[in-house]
Image 1 (cartoon, rainbow, N blue to C red):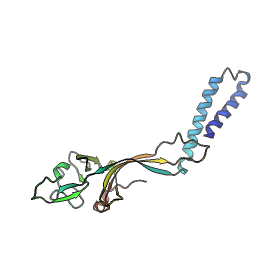
Image 2: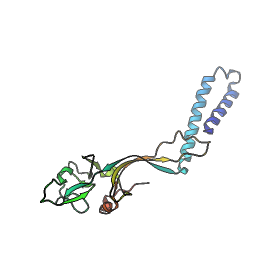
Image 3: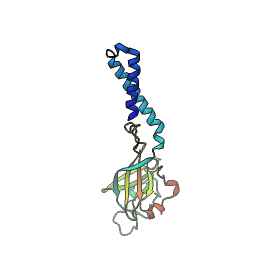
Image 4: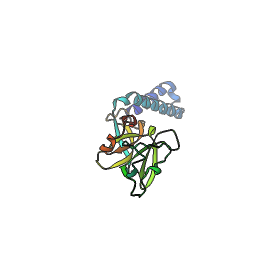
Length: 196
């Protein structure tokens, strides 16, 4: 913050030396130049020094994922579809005593596109995300799975010389958290680990 103020003072002093008696007549021009120089100096200093700050992760929201019964004939042990033509709802076991079920919070499938999807259920609504857009991590609970939106920020500065105002967040990510036992069944090739 002090760099912003110091920049304004230095530019004002240089303008005073340059304009001399006409300084007051040109006060708006001096103010504009001072503001621009101060802004550029502050942004440049922030950009150069931000890598030394370290980062923190904030969870913006979490949504609990329901456990779903899947038809054992249509999924394998890693909850990957055996039939790429079927949708997520086609894999869910209907109350039929002749079909056995496997319980999971997710299903990997392709229906409707050649891009791998991960299907899940929140509030009895079947949803999906493209696997290339999300990350997968183990949950802290043995039974609870959830979907979360995470944001990575730079740490706040303790130094008064540089302002925090121009530090943007680094990255926003979406992550599935599955119970450790369920996470262990997912092949390594399908796990996108969090980059932070």
